Length: 103
Image 1: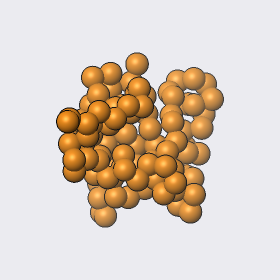
Image 2 (image 1 turned 120 degrees about the horizontal axis):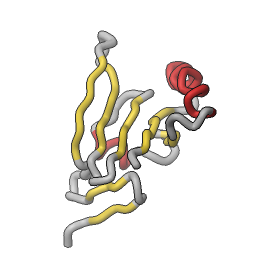
Image 3 (image 1 turned 180 degrees about the vertical axis):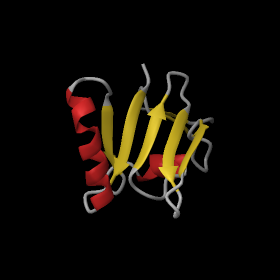
């Protein structure tokens, strides 16, 4: 099953608003959202996905692909799907929380 990750920070007012908008759907079990604090935990994963702003939603698919959904400075929604890799070629799988690096 696909999961939604919400990259946030504790100091971000827009992140709090995004969580509040999803609250009813989460409580009803309509969606599963896993919050990742970009500053505390998710910097490497965020870099591998090209996440530079918060809040940013990432839909992690069973095949390891991650679809990043964010917005530009004009407020236009953007979506981009890719397999998250860092500069060393290590692949991050958000669903099973693994990192695989080629030797």
